[in-house]
Length: 383
Length: 200
Image (cartoon, rainbow over all chains, first blue to last red):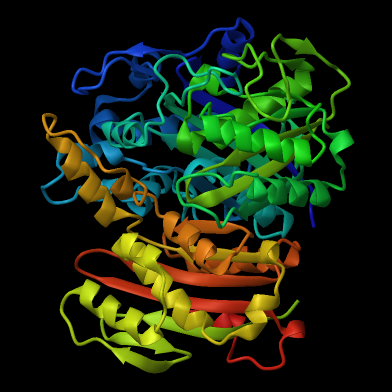
């Protein structure tokens, strides 16, 4: 089994293009969530985080803009940026893995009753992106709802570790859409303002839009930015086998996933220096996480959720939040958990109310849970 | 580690098959009526079945045919059983249904019971609930045998799983099909019906 590293990353989000731009905003305490104009939606107000196209769209020609969809262009931009430092790579040992829940769902919105636009199918979208770069291996899409991003990173880790590939580019993204907004609204799961993960007054999620990518490799020598470099030392996935649209009350599945990750890493709870939680700010999710972390002896580990900055970015979330977790770990600088003021879970957690410096921190745990009952955990080590 | 296939099941528009043998032949044009025949044949009572969309029903039925009478499956540690399913059209039929329900802005009442099926991994979640599986449940697209086989082998080799329900399930209004395999470590199993490499 080979050691796998994260060696480069890239983000397009409401907080900017590129990871350094995003980190600068996060450190300044800025959130990308705001009340947005979404005039066709009969439900107001709408709080969400959205990507500003003026920041990146002009990098593409008019031909590219008319041939590729908005999400495809974001994916292509991310891949171009991620491949820059690694252009000497042998592509026969390279794989693209895409994490998304709904892909080009906006195309279906434009013509629900007309013939289906084939690009709305995930494998078609993946093939178009793969063809742009002439990657020799067919891209793989992982669609595990809200845990897709962590699932995709673990798939990449497992395949490199087993020796099937040397490099896997893991890319996650989803659009802000009527489709998803209306669905979450029908679940009464949306917050009426900026979301408040783990807080007493939390009232639901904000939806967010982002594309995030991370380059996984067996060769840490290819890394050109030490803030992006981390060892993946453990991972685990599970299913609650309880309910398709709600978490297990006691966090059964999350406990299994985290325990698997810690076992693979050869660590105990005392070794975990920081937790990047899923923390969607729904009443049930955050309570479930608190119970699982407490049961695992992780109640005292410094913890934050990034949902108060980005909202729930669905297919991007696991990757986006892992990237920010790695940068926090490498810089020994941990963000306050935006939207958190007073504990709102039955089991206490060490939710960061203020920015915290800890240069000794070595291991970071990232978790995700979601629709379909899935849970995923991944552990990073500062190299 | 040597992996083997210890059971198979398949549902096509021709009929339902268990370990290669036809068990229910399709007498209908409409998928829902054929699925009902399969459900009746299985002689089970599972009210959640009626809430599922066609994709999840297809996955559910195929897994029932796979696991009927498979006692050893019940003995595995539930956290060590994985489900890995390939798919091409994701949740297209439910997606279209949800989209139509929200396309009229004056009649904007999407149903949560439709929306929840607009994700392809929900069929795996349903399967985990039915069979109390607590291991990894992963939905991969498109159908790509090379990656699929490597992925499952790595799940076993890395110690993440001791048993895996693996296969393909796809449903659209014009075509459908499901094929599932029970994959186990040969050291745990006295007899098998096929080598892992013969999958699909």
